[in-house]
Image (cartoon, rainbow, N blue to C red):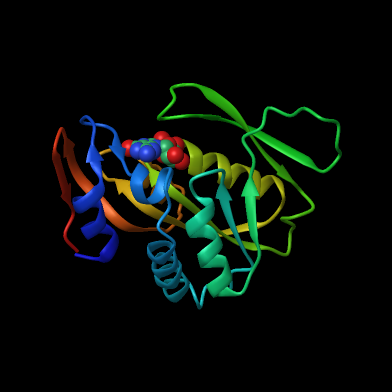
Length: 191
Ligand code: 5GP
């Protein structure tokens, strides 16, 4: 069991068969030491992938993505969830359905910050249905950049996200793979 899995067992809250709360160390209060260790782990795994930028979705992916970018020595780009339709010729947008909130939002990227020369690592806190990651991939492609892989802190393996991304040919590297979730029960896939 790795450090993230151990911390999930200690401080994570299985709210239901679908939702895992990690508010005390990732989503609301953030543990910088754990984020730094996660950054180290991702940077180590992806060091030979030729990554030029780390791309995450605001807001919960920012802390681990920043640590990963720092350790890879590349910039971090944050995809914005703002509904902005401000006229800007560089603005790329795509619609994403939110798993947790049950609504849709526009994901926005200024094409100035990801270009055709970039090979991007997409990093997010959770993978569930794969909608957020797929939206991020669409935006990176709209910017004519390539996707190196998808890095995830917590994958809920009983949901179809990984399958959808693998089908499109993307590698998904998750630090914690939850195979079972119910009130008070959290079980991981042992690798
Ligand atoms: P997907 O788009 O893969 O269905 O869902 C991923 C997004 O939904 C993540 O960016 C994350 O913010 C949120 N999410 C999905 N499942 C959970 C969960 O069990 N707990 C929390 N805290 N967020 C989740």
